[in-house]
Amino acid sequence: MTRETILNTFLFLLLPATALAAFALDEPFIITLATKAAILALAGVGLNIALGLGGLVSFGHAAFFGLGGYAMGILAAHAQSYTPLMESPFLIEGTKSMPVIWLVALVVSALAALLIGALSLRTSGVYFIMVTLAFGQMLFYFAISWPAYGGEDGLSIYVRNGFPGLNTLDPLTFFGIAFVILAAVLFFAGRLARAPFGLALSAARQNAERVESVGLAPFRLRLVAFVISGAVTGLAGALFADLNRFVSPTMFSWQTSGEIMVFVILGGVGRLFGPVAGAALFILLEHVLGGLSEFWHIYLGLLLLLVVLFARGGMIGLIAGREVAHD
Amino acid sequence: MSLILLIEQVLNGVQSGIMLFLMAAGLTLIFGVMGLINLAHGSLYMVGAFAAAAVAAATGSFLLALVAALAAAALAGCLIEMTVIRRLYDRDHLDQVLATFALILIFSEGTRFLFGSFPLFLDIPSALSGPVMLPGGIQYPLYRLVIIGVGLAIAAGLFLLIARTRIGIQIRAGEADREMIAALGVDIAKLYTLIFALGAALAGLAGALVGAIQSVQVGMGEPVLILAFVVIVIGGIGSIKGALIGALLVGLTDTLGSVLLPLLFANFMEASAATSVGSSLASMSIYILMAGVLLFKPTGLFGEA
Image (tube, rainbow over all chains, first blue to last red; front, side, top):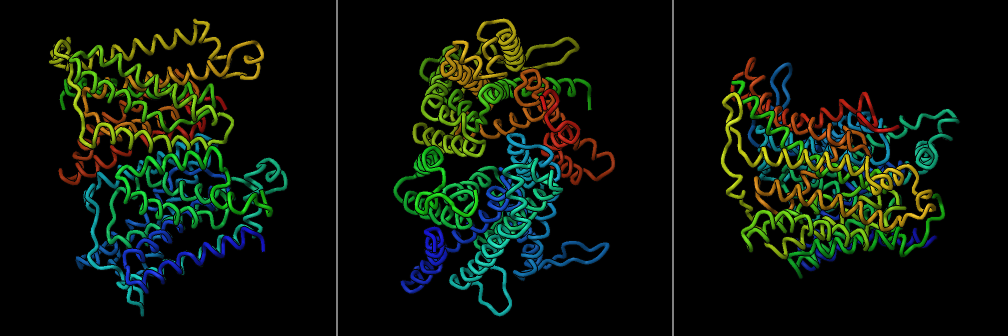
């Protein structure tokens, strides 16, 4: 086992261990924090597929996070007010069922990623960063000015959505759901990185011309990666909305995009478990520093600055050293 | 809708476009010469506005406030260039985005720590307040006309600086080949600091000028920063001319869209639905404009491939 594998195992067990310990000590708030870390890590794992594997610096992943959140918010709001979402040409009802909501969140954010990706991937480098940022802002302003679903105030859902056979109101159960999804997506992302598709995508990041010359289309590889990445982040958005039982345009804001990116970087770009480490550290900092000072973002900023300037592999890079498998 | 209202809105659009240009010019210069994407540019805008508000409150002089805005933003620019930004020129864009994102966090929270969360107010000087009568019977606020004039004068000055002066030659040479001009004996580190400070000062000035129309508060810089990004993506990164045209396009689309689109939809929809659809679409209009430009010219109107 390499040091990174040992570290990954430790990180993987850290979240459930924290949640179980909190359960034993009867600290539901800590369980909620662990759940939040798992969900934000999921959003980061999504971004990491585009950013780490594909080298696509998307500064607009809040778009997918928010779409996932609003998919949950809109469906659940219609279910709780017993009004159909749409009556013609055919009837669509709201729902409080998590699996259905997740599916809708995945499909909606994948479609949005297809559209945004198809346009943004025509550009590269710094244009790509700015264009994805602008698309995120476009949805942000749309969410603010569209009055049907709360506009600037957002939407509140009174009762958490249900999952067949489980009591989702129990914090530990909801943590379990979020963690199982995170684990499944981590497994999928790990497989994806080693699959022919992942290798080709990684090659396109390193040298697009060579990939093209062996007959693969970098644009198509990147677009598929962007769609997968957006869909995963969208799923995380739906879970995040369920955790808070609230959605608002803040989920679409550029700060959200920045924070998802921070999880990936704090942990280590392109490392499978980077977002898990980053999100856990972020939640820990928010909790510890936020308790010490109202202005904890200053310390977060300084830490981020130090990581970017002096510790380029992020936390995992610091502890486990340079990657051996690929780079 | 009357013609007078339309002309007023066009002037408003030009005014916001000119202020965007002051932001976008700095961003595009910094990107063109140093290859740096600077998210903290909005923080420099905020620094300018806060410095102006604080000095205006202490002295009562708007002119001193503007000088303070220029000086504070240029100084903050020099400081972050020499401590942080300098280390980022050779890094990839991801590192630049994150480091400057970190700077935003530090600037925003630092300002909140110093000035509190409540907005400050910067008053329009009495000599410039009140409306003026334009030919054709249009009443328009004098202050907005003045800042259009100031902005245009600065744009002209910037073009002259870049086209006619020794510094301008060095800036253009730096865009073309930085190793070469370093080899020819230009102190490249000093040149970079100077360009960064120039961009910062323009952003700070824009912050102070706009701060007198809107409120001065933490986080005021970021919406403008993102609009300025849209401007330079439309205009083409690195092109001052592109920044000017892009800024006017974005300013006009934004202002006219929010007035005209609801009216347009009112022609074939009921009033309340027209307002909501129109205003939603208006808030998206500049991004749609950007997407449209990128579809036809992925490097912007005046960008080089």
